[in-house]
Amino acid sequence: MIFRIFLGTFMALLSFNIFSTELGQLSPQQLTQLHQQKKALILDIRTPEEWKATGIIPNSHPLQFFDKKGNNDPDKWLAEVKKLQADKDQPIVLVCRSGNRSSMVGKLLTQKLKMNNIHHLSNGMSHWLKSSQPVEKCTATLSC
Image 1 (cartoon, one colour):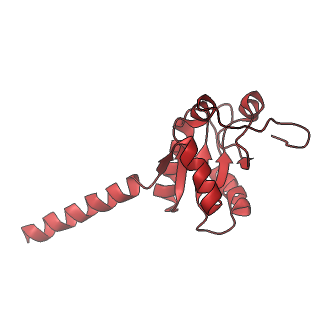
Image 2 (cartoon, helix red, strand yellow):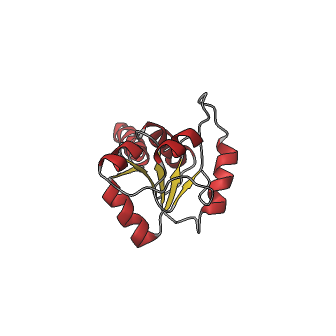
Image 3 (cartoon, rainbow, N blue to C red):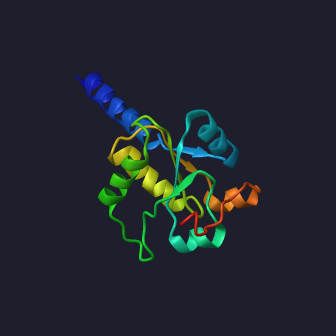
């Protein structure tokens, strides 16, 4: 009986660990490689002001998650993601300024919604820019 309780507790902890580590962290080079090889959907969840200040990663989609006050509408945001996603198995990469917001959103997607193949850019757009990666500036043809 004690063994069964121990085994049940161990399995519950193991499954929690698996779900809590599902969110992948990517370097700028890994993000580029994942996009090229698997056509990853890159979602820039920053604010319009941030997009205009730094530009966005080429082939990414500006899709703000938190407003200036930190509010969000996950259902509305997720509906927009579904429109952009080629299929449910397409990798998704989340990008924010420093990696904090993308990590929170990624955990929401992996832990609460049980979505797979979710990643975020480690240290965010700051890391992308420091590693001299290309950006697209917001213009009349590229609205951000």
